[in-house]
Image 1 (cartoon, each protein chain N blue to C red):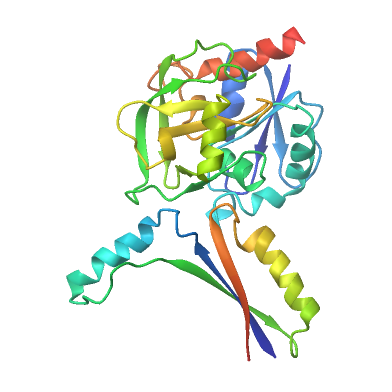
Image 2 (tube, each protein chain N blue to C red):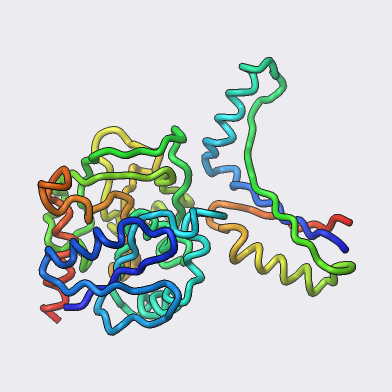
Amino acid sequence: MAIIVVEVMLKREILDPQGQAVASALPRLGFTFAQSVRQGKRFEIEVAGDPTPAQIAEVEKAAHTLLSNPVIENFVVKVEK
Amino acid sequence: MRIGVVTFPGSLDDRSALRAIELAGGTPVPLFHGTNDLKEVQAVVLPGGFSYGDYLRCGAISRFSPIMESIILAAEHGFPVLGICNGFQILCESHLLPGALTRNSDLHFICADQRVAVENTNTPWTRGYTKGQEIVIPIKNGEGSFQCSDETLKELEDEGRIVLRYVGKNPNGSRNAIAGISNKAGNVVGVMPHPEQAIENLTGPSEDGLEFFSSILKEMVGR
């Protein structure tokens, strides 16, 4: 069994108020390391056996059509065992 | 004059939209997301609400419902579609309209009577307004911040496709204070504020929204 991971992030130029809210909450708790924070989504898709290149291509297609909105978001697909 | 209103799982304002159509003098026709049957309506309204609980992204799952297949196909051939709030989000996810609606810049859900200017009156939904007319209709959303690329923004502005623009303080960080846009042809319009909630003084802040529904009816009679 393997897990295909899709990570979706807002594009750099798109305002991320959630990330900004997290960034401003960190110093209140004494964490001073963050210059900025961006918040995204992570999908874990379980597949039987090692994923084939065809399967990965299908996931990329799904990431493009449903899991992300290419107008405002970018995504990466990777495999975790 | 049959105008449809689609109910998705989680739609809120479908009944209000049906009522607005009736008050404007049309025949409201309830449509259901799970079939592709448009029931011979001559125009369609995608109402506000939280279809599919806003899971994934607002409108992202509704966009793939059977009724949307029919609507997307028809809209590409000039069929009039009005998306209000969640309906606007669905139209953007469907790529019938450019851009996307994202989280309000202050992260708050905003519920307020909002002054907006009607700029593009060259659509079947807004022809009854005068260009630049200011109207007061409610906004009620958490993800109403209109975002798009610089090229798209320039295209929308240059082609006069801004249907509604916020007047006064920009409530949610929308680019160029955009509250509503149309497609190139003008038949598809998406607006964040709710015209169907401003159709009579008893229940809304004004009657300013009714003209959206009167306009489409006049347009259809004229054909």
